[in-house]
Length: 154
Image (cartoon, rainbow, N blue to C red):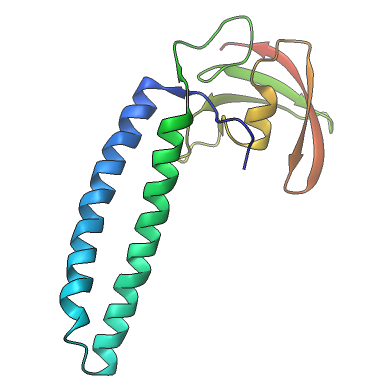
């Protein structure tokens, strides 16, 4: 987990608040079903259903806690800066192996977009605040890597 929370846009904050409300509603439904079934467990199928609801409740509680923490700690960003990498920036980088890629720094990977790099990913966190000409180091799944910021925008 990164030491500092990544910045968040107002749109992302609103999306997380909507997700949090939906999760809390779902949690209430699951908790009520679990409570109602607790006294009625009779056969193995009932016990399996109760165990599944308990697992669902833990999963919901974990996600609610993560979103609540994210909302409490994150700073809301404005439009992306034009002179350095920020949330919302489009950045062209050259990796140490010579490959070049253009990515956008975003808040989350809800949309499966190959050009989106989340601000809290190793590369995204390394790029934040840097300018063209800077080289950043980060840890990728395959090990330590570096990338040079070539340009910002388009």
